[in-house]
Length: 230
Figure (cartoon, rainbow, N blue to C red):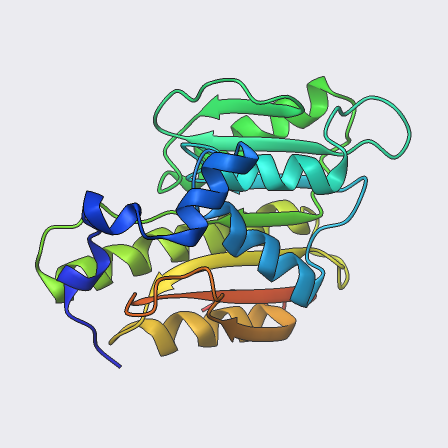
């Protein structure tokens, strides 16, 4: 399914009529996308109290706010989770969130940085969920923007595959959520998630704008690695 890219761009006048934008302002979320993750969590249970979560492409921080609220971000006591937010841009501090600057398309460097953060907090490299709402900067060229979306989503999946099961020895209960634009590359990405996880579904939250091309792919339960991932 293809959508005109202009439907991905939102005018300021439209924001004033957007109920999720208004709610985000009222409830203190940094972006309306916070409600997309809330809906995903409620439907699929991808986050729970005490989890260690990595949020890729996190700025301005709406998803990290939600994740910290669910897992009990704080990171040191029993039952307290940790959220590690990764973005190229610096991000204003969020309570219960550790923000680091890294390019998620540099997968090896991002994995290294996240592991260093977790070791410094005594979390022994255990990651329970990797989430990503990253989007490319739109060029206006539909095919190019869809491909850039695939690149970001694929990088998120590679990072998740490394962090959720660092030793590759057995099936894990780690979860994964990533956004991708619908189009020529969607099936390719969905197939890669299905290959890696015991449960895979796509989902369009009601908080997504009706004519948006975005869709979220959810993976639960990372499989034991059999040779090289596709």
